[in-house]
Image (cartoon, rainbow, N blue to C red; front, side):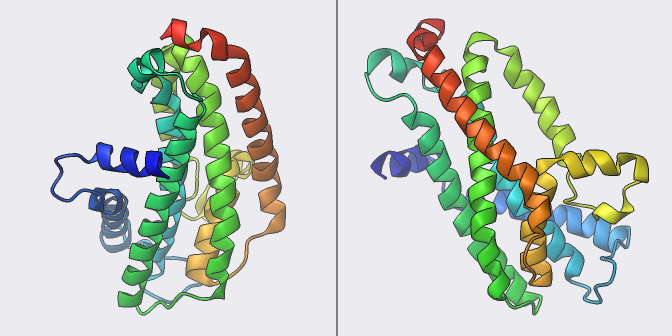
Length: 249
C-alpha cells in the first residue's frame, strides 16, 4: 500500500489539483461526448424516455474504458519508465505493474463516487444492480493487467509495440459501444462488435448504472476466457524474460 500511495503522490507532484485530475479528465471527456452527441446531434437512447439517459450511458461506458486503458497503457510502459530503479535496486519487478493496478483501482472507485453524485443531479438514483460493477471491475482490470504486462515485456525488447498499441487502442475504443448504441451498428460490423471482449464488460457498467440490470452471462464468457489467458500468458512471458529484462533496458 505504501508503494501505491507513493506512486499516486509522485504522479501529481507540484500539481495544485493533485488527484482531482484523475476525476476531471474522464468526466470532461464524457461531458464533451454528451454535449456534442446528445445536444447538438440529438442522440437519444432507444426505449429510454429520460433525457439524461444518454449522458448516463456515456459516463458509464467511459468509466469502464478508463479503467481498462489506464491499467493497460501504464503497464505497457512501466518497465521502461522504471528502468533506472530496476538497474540500481533489487526488488520483485512484477510489483511495478501490480502498483499500477492498485493505483488504477483506487482512481476508479473515486471516479465512480463522483459519477454517483452527478447521477443524483440527473435525478438518477443508484440501485442494487450497482453491485454488478464489482465483478465487471475485476474482469476489466485483470484483462488489462494481463495484456499490459505481456505487451510491456515485449515493449522492452521491441519499442514499436507501444506505438502500435497507441493506434490499436484508438480503434479498440471506437469498436466498443461507448458513445453509440450497439444496435445502430451496421450488420456487417456486428460480428466484430460481438467478438470485442470490452463490449460485454462495458455493457456491465451501462446496464447496471443506467438500466439497473444485471449483465448477460453469455456476453461475459469471452472476457472471462481472455482475462484468464492474458494473465497466465503475462506471468509466463515475464518469468521467461525476467533474466534479460534489465540488460535490455
